[in-house]
Length: 151
Image 1 (cartoon, rainbow, N blue to C red):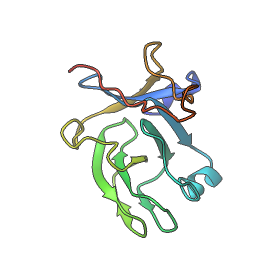
Image 2: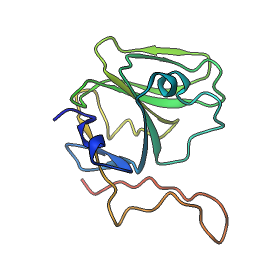
Image 3: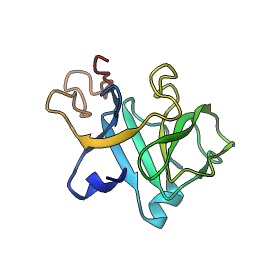
Image 4: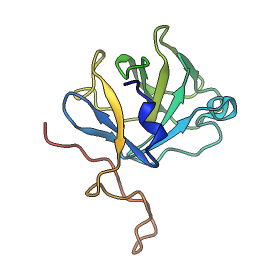
């Protein structure tokens, strides 16, 4: 099965580390069209904790015009991690020639001790016990939605 195959049946996928079962992102947005791939995270003030954007058919990204740093995992069509870039600051470029998609998270969203080049990730349905990414009624803020399953 290819990395994005589950999108045909999933509405609100999570990103999961295949070897450990750890949830990397509880909310995943996928940029599949030319317009959404070009836009990516441009124009946003940030990315909520536990959120990721997957840019398909992409082996190079830039942060020109962005206002925040990101972590990026480049994966092949099977979800195998080919390259990881941590804390890519604005006005920078990252390239991974053999990659098929780029997974972008807010800086610090990828733990260097838990995801490595050669590991595989996949998209899965949101678990019923995963925290929702909705606003907290009491504070009006978005809670942290990153959770890590026991290895």
